[in-house]
Image (tube, rainbow, N blue to C red; front, side, top):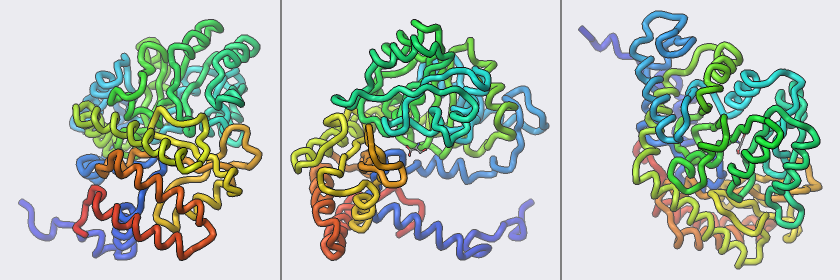
Length: 422
Ligand code: DSN
């Protein structure tokens, strides 16, 4: 029988400082235009799962084969997540335990190849990710990564050059996928290149997983033998990762995750991934994915009409990369000015960037979070106008603050999903 004594004190009672930080961050997320393309608002159902007592359970191993007792109930959560993931993405096998997209990528490398093996990945300034072989990352230190990039003219992937590079270096694994690439990836073409040199194709769909789930981007299923992703971007799930693969690679992928590179899985987060996968399989999510891309395209057109240069001339996804150098700006300066106006983006390198990643010549922005708030084409025209004006007056703090007042009005009209009363 429960008594009052069983109830634990609340966060606000135990640690008012952290409670205040959580509350202020919730307000910040609702009072700015959140345009970092890898961010989104997880649903209340996802956040409830992540904040649940499933965090208490140790479950090293996999459902039905754990190294701890008492896992029958959490096994059900992991099985639901695995089944929903394979059904949604049309792949044979899913591992839902990776703590992040980075962990998912490292687990695949560990499971499928050996240190020193040759791998091909997209270089960072062309839009790739640190875990696609950058020298400062374990991927670049442990494996012999050879990098492909984009064509200087079109700023899109040069698949012919990629094929030549593959023939020259005969990689065991080819990684496609990006964090700052606004165009769709041709998975069929990438698979043909991999087949030509007898490599395995790995698609890192972290940025576009939600678009793929919603049918707004071509799927890697049937092309890539292994697919990795994070779960908190366009998918709107909890912070985490996943690997999907053909049955042939299932055992090696699983061993790459556990015991290869992780210990106990976060069962609370796995439950949140299961909820995310249920939500992403709905018609409402398909509409969300479609609207996210439409919003990005309207925003791109608005910025171009205002005289800004977009890398590759536009977007086919949720993401835009604005070259701010024609305005005499550096990426970091531009992103900081936008934040003063309440528009949160991130500075980024652009293809063939002379600037280091700590400065960048571009600003990366996207529409996933704004679309979650219910904004559509009309609002994207407004947002594009605000961005163009803010970049123009970047040195005038008062002008930026006055643009911020317009941002605040828009945010009030399209409230972010809220957990606490405001
Ligand atoms: N996934 C990266 C991003 O796109 O923000 C960070 O690792």
